[in-house]
Length: 175
Image (cartoon, rainbow, N blue to C red; front, side, top):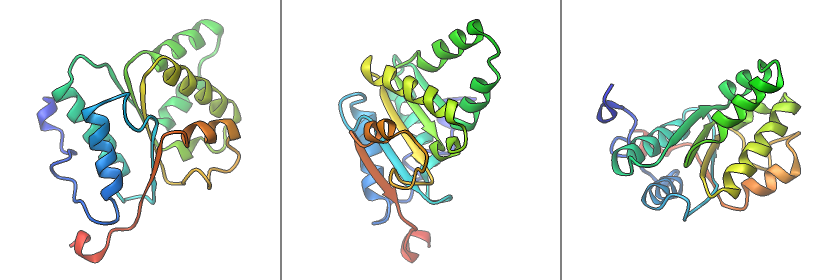
């Protein structure tokens, strides 16, 4: 499939007062990855456009900055890969795969709520990426204050960038 065929793009994202900040921040990340809003944390209820923005970032970067290595992970997939790594060699391979790249787009952070060891692994992965200068964008149905049972140090790092909330769109935007 050609990247131009991706359906979720900035061009077909409907912008209103409920999502203007998140949209502008996502566009800024595409213009200057690693320089602005790192990390960018986007929260909001299901159906408000979080995954659409992540896919739009991915598409925009692949079209305009093809030299960047972009990784897109649903955190359910991250969790599954991590818990199924059965030995040190598989864990080493997992870590290399999860930490190799320039821009990391993570969808559904809230899905890690129940697995302590995966949250710990994600914390170390996140730290590694930020320390090496990679760009991170994360979505969650819950904002950072609602992420119960997440390590305080992870929440603190998520909040060191820009946190935005996608509110339910107004009638005019939905229309």
